[in-house]
Length: 136
Image (cartoon, rainbow, N blue to C red; front, side):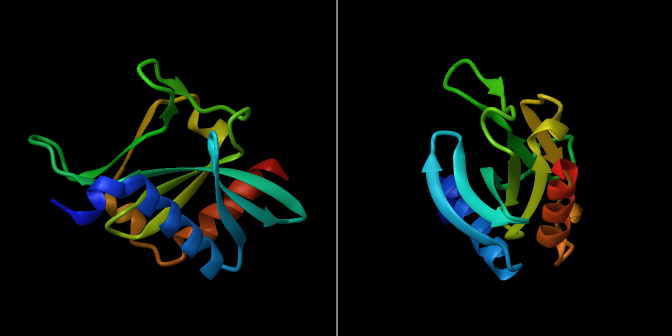
């Protein structure tokens, strides 16, 4: 069993914050209901919900990352702007982050992303800027 499997959520928060800090984005882990990280950029505070995934290997499917982008216990609901501004999808094995404005996820409850999409070493910076551009 992959050691981080038991703590994938926490590991994802740390990967996300580390990547943001390395990209020059002022960020801090806060864990306030649906907000995991707060970031300061473009003279605004941004609320970030972190969702982590480990590589999945399923029979009959290509390997990939499957993100649960919903909140709640037994009854899951999609994230909305009331919950956060930006959703950070963290690929644990790649130690990479893909940021989405929460509204661009179209109220989906899951999102599947190919591992190759996380190979870009500048993914964090690029997708962060695109997410902020969406709002400004």
